[in-house]
Length: 588
Image (cartoon, rainbow, N blue to C red):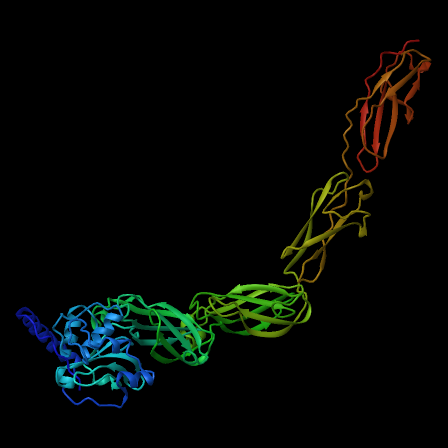
């Protein structure tokens, strides 16, 4: 056992300070020191400066200066002087009162200076400290060279009062505490882990005493530990407020928690391993592991019914995606080949139909996971149909059903044709198609059942040839998915003669004397199939009829008045009659 001695010229003030430190040490010992018992003396790795150096165990140059006092500790072979030297070499400020430094008080003095002193998480460069109660004498301090957490041991380099320099192994459980001044190994915990749909949620905390108030990063590995082929994930910094952790580890602050969800490509039962990442470098310890079950993030569902109601495809079933919960998701249907293939017909719909049976099996899916819709397709005959649930969030679209249907054209639910307009020569008739659903139409007009040449529009103007006949129209409807259908209208009444308008008024010219020739001027009017007839009258009595527009006065016309009546004739139209004014009395 090694002890330390203070310098001989301690002042009264220093003695009072030592008493105060002792009181603080006694307080620390209640929590940091075990009940007094013998330390397990494990084998030394080497003894003496030369022998240790030859074996590869150094002393950081202390062998050449060990007769010099550091931090006013006794020079020579002395545990406190050696550790004070190593602290000074590492740039650690003095945390013990000069000249007051028995090893048993180092823990309380370090704590009073704000350093972390605990029995857990030793790191290279820390000071291992034993109180008098733990090791006897004036206590002991040593410099931590390596740590084997799995074995529960650590290796120190140390010097001993009245003894020699050596390297030795100790048990972690038998120290009074570690004064954390080295690159501390971080520590923490995994409080909970839960698998989900392609994801894992973890909660816990992590601290690195090298940077006690700074949040550190946490890494997760799924399927195997780090370095063993596990799927790695950087979860970011553990910066969530955790007051309970802050209270348990004073001086570290309250922001050391982590609570995050990350995605994974692994499925089924997997082990997740959590590691605290050392700052700035060093060993990254495992701070927890747990077994979780990871389900697929892809949507689920089924195609319950598939049929073809004439030129259409009808699908019914259910689908849900854990990422969207009870919200509706899209359903895509492909006819002729799977999604992504050329030459397919496709349509889409959404869930939203009540399916309480699905809700019983998958409560998270809600009660409206059903889909039921019908769409038109150009495909005919036996056709494969593929139904996909469209993914939400991570994962991919899922084929939830397929089948084969025979697709044939279906009938129109309504199919008729009517004619509006007046069946009279010169009037326009209009065909009206009444089909459900609406379609594309072609027309053909008929006269007494015989197709009328070039009459193929939705309207038809009645011609003189149609007089005294009946007119009908046939309408042909075409629409994808429906049987091409032709319907005929009812016949019109017999076509009546047209009504023509003659704006000209006929008049007579010529000399009203026996032997002279009179001429009637009939004027002009439009239209085809026209003809003129003229009847001449002497004092109201017809004397000549025909088509001649001239009349030669005879002795019989002497003293009489002559006038003409013109007949305006046009095929298919009513004849219009107009008379001229009477001439003056015919002279001899």
